[in-house]
Image 1: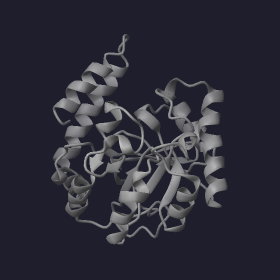
Image 2 (image 1 turned 90 degrees about the vertical axis):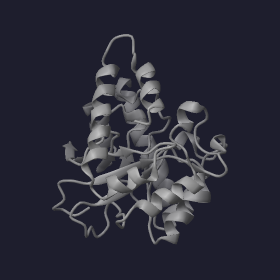
Image 3 (image 1 turned 135 degrees about the vertical axis):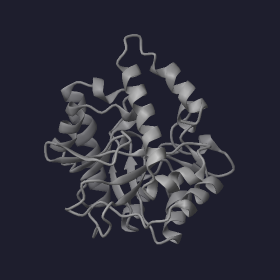
Length: 262
């Protein structure tokens, strides 16, 4: 990213499947499927993005860089996502849950190596994708970040300096543990364009994309439109407050918000 950039726009995708086969790639279950797009729908999203996405560590030509990120490490990245990006001359940021490498529905070690060789940025999405990583102990956080980074570096033969926070549960402890593991750019799930810092690490927010979201929304966000960004920021704040309430009413609120397409 350009040294001068104080703002970035990052879009957060997950799996892209064919013919609605949501169980074919990535994590199973409806909670995960909410964030999976069908291949036809994904193509429309890409068609709506009117700027050329950049890569962290690339030349960085745009005043406000746009990044495409993909969480979890599902096999659909090599079967659907990468070819569709490459047809446009684009590359993406792939964040891998390393405990799942080589298991059904996820990328194999060989596929991870191939994608890195094709120019996609490979980063950590933790080892195990804890349900609430912000509740992990310091030892657990060290394991999640350091061991995942080490495995990916062994696979790709290159330094791994990017990561994304699983589940959206960021805390300063999570960020500092990632920085201690050598991660220099950490993507969160907070919908913001501001570039933050924790330790030696940059913190970049992301705007979530999920199933049935109109393609025009992702295009508008990438183009810098304010209204869809403000809407996501509003709902993010509401969810953050709900997560802090004893009894964890967040699950019910999450279902309601996703049912509204928010």
